[in-house]
Amino acid sequence: MPRRPTDHRGRELTDQGELDEAFALVAGRFERREVRLRTRRCLEGLLSGLERKNGWTLAESS
Image (cartoon, rainbow, N blue to C red):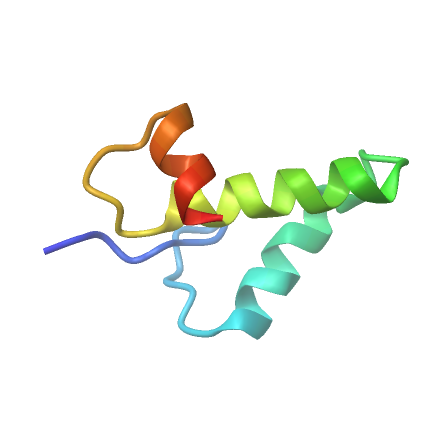
């Protein structure tokens, strides 16, 4: 069974709004919009239930 994504405090993220809140903690570190969007998609892939998490599978999932 895949692990559910968690926030910085270890609480499970149950919906998109909670992922938005978690990403808001680091979004300010990226000045350019394109970089923020790419980072967001990468984070979503890392927190997803993918069996293997490498560059190829993350690119396919986004």
